[in-house]
Image 1 (cartoon, helix red, strand yellow):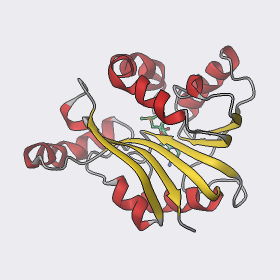
Image 2: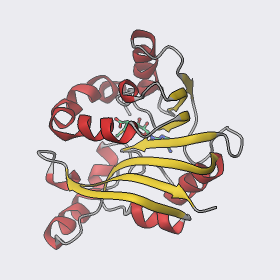
Image 3: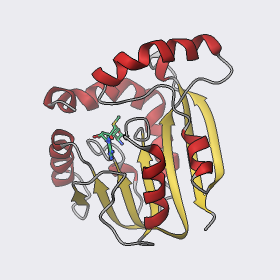
Length: 207
Ligand SMILES: C[S@@+](CC[C@H](N)C(=O)[O-])C[C@H]1O[C@@H](n2cnc3c(N)ncnc32)[C@H](O)[C@@H]1O
């Protein structure tokens, strides 16, 4: 992310947050308990939604500009105990079986290697641990929209920091050995049509 994008990220997201995302985050993150690893934490929009059942949050963010915004939010907010780590989803600097939950919201669209990231989530999750996610995805049952996503994706990836429009992360989760115990598909309200199709929910490890 450029310095500029990191600065405007929260304002850019504000209407989607008001419209749907804030509520989705609240519902999803109410399920997080114990030791939580949040990957691609961005500016920290999820932090306010963690409950007292969460004992500690480790927030991973590889982009220095987003990390600076996140550090600022951690300092200002009610989450002084959040640990901030510079790392990538594909290579997490944590021991096996060390977290009760992994959280990634709007992140699998941007990582370089979805399969490698999911293998890392598996590795660091304790047996029975939860992977909580929100992602925008390739359109299903709407060939016209999917065609537009395919057309625009090459340019979009460049302007939006490697964000892909046609990924199918639910399939990737199953291929990685996760069981999708809860999966909601819903349109992201008034978002740009190319990022409206979304999934959110919970995947568990069948290891
Ligand atoms: C669209 S933002 C989402 C931020 C935040 N999770 C949210 O819900 O608002 C995508 C984030 O993923 C991060 N990211 C991109 N590639 C990553 C990778 N390989 N590993 C971890 N985070 C990554 C970006 O730096 C950015 O902060």
